[in-house]
Image (cartoon, rainbow, N blue to C red; front, side, top):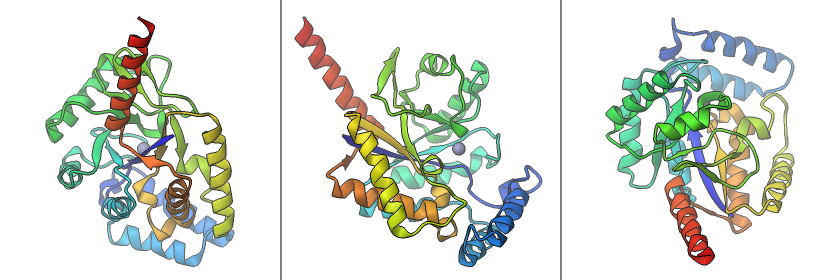
Length: 276
Ligand SMILES: [Zn+2]
């Protein structure tokens, strides 16, 4: 089982939200409620306030450093449209994408907003190509949104791959597009509103991994939001660090989507020859 790690970038800074959405206000109310009901620590609460005050809502750099030190050649998904509390401007992503691609280690893809309107979906893709200068990339929908036509439309838009829909399933193709079911995502695997010990988190991960390993898949896809690579979100932060440590200790290695696709295409070709 090869592991593909990816990161949805939903937020870059505090300022992008001001006058545009209620993300900051809602978060402040929710964080305070979690603090007074003892679901998060005071240190977590203060770190979240500090992030808002210092205009820093992304951990792309810190997470890339951690990934590189652990052999994780991850893919980061950035949006070129806005919706559901994703409010950064497309002009803001250029520098981050350059930073990641200049590493010659990480890849980027698009975090899709529209999922049922072909022309809006095409616009997001065209904008991404214009900003990045790259033409062969994949997509994951923000909030994993989609309907029964989404994948077919993405395939018609010539996406290299999609990794939106959650399930423990082998990658497959729709037309030329590869579909990588999303196997594990931080907010689906662990709660952000209760306290866990380190051992509880490790046990949770091992149980989750055993279920995945039993499915005997060639590749699995994991999503961790860079925003949570922060001591302000201790559960998710520890979940990711332990997950990488445990995956390595169980002998799993990391590949990116492109490497996985090359593997899968090779296998398809072998099967085709075999069946001739
Ligand atoms: Zn998202």
